[in-house]
Length: 160
Image (cartoon, rainbow, N blue to C red; front, side):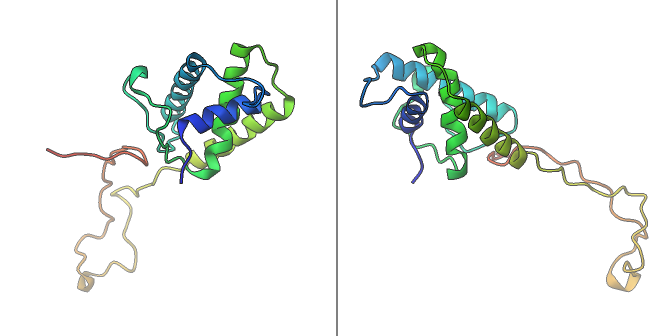
């Protein structure tokens, strides 16, 4: 079961020392934190870090209790970086451990997102000794490259 947006926000506040047992989060604070969470995840998505986070089409349509379907390995990166974003709004100083942990977790997500593009051989490259006419190949060269369509790991393409 994946985390909800509310759980990310509560964990971020706990990370910066704004624990639930001492401070009660007001609905306004939760709403502003939700906007920051959605904005942060949208910027990550734009940077190529696609985590299956449900981005709303407008801030008013976002719901705190929506399950995110984010992989468990990304949870710490999300709530630590959200905590860095929320700390100035409540007048908290962030511990150095949180800063370094947030950077390290984000860097790991960047590394996982940086997959090399698939390379295609040019059509002028000889097919080699294994390309015999009796195997069904009539062309002595490899096939021309196919122009790929980049839709991202979590995207679908609809054809009408």
